[in-house]
Length: 120
Image 1 (spheres, helix red, strand yellow):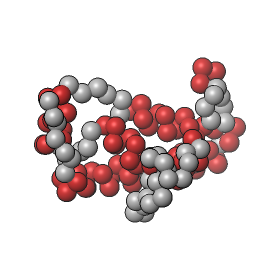
Image 2: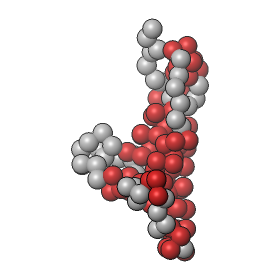
Image 3: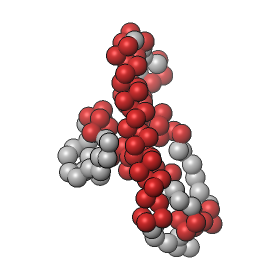
């Protein structure tokens, strides 16, 4: 079953909100890190391979972790003002230079494109 193509005109407002929301959450995270650096650099034993910034982005992605049935995905694409969850994670993250730094994404890769949409 083909689910169709996303219509950016229908999702633009929410895409902007997702992009700006992640950026503001990241700024709040960084501000908290600066206020309490000892706490900010605590390591979680079972996630010790990740740094604080990586954990921030992983936590954001976890919020949107979902699996769609074809009918649900079709409905989201055709009726919902939001894009499917994977785009709500990947697109805002790819527009944030801090994500590329945190995960060492090569410039020009999908998660660190040359052109980024930065509104605020």
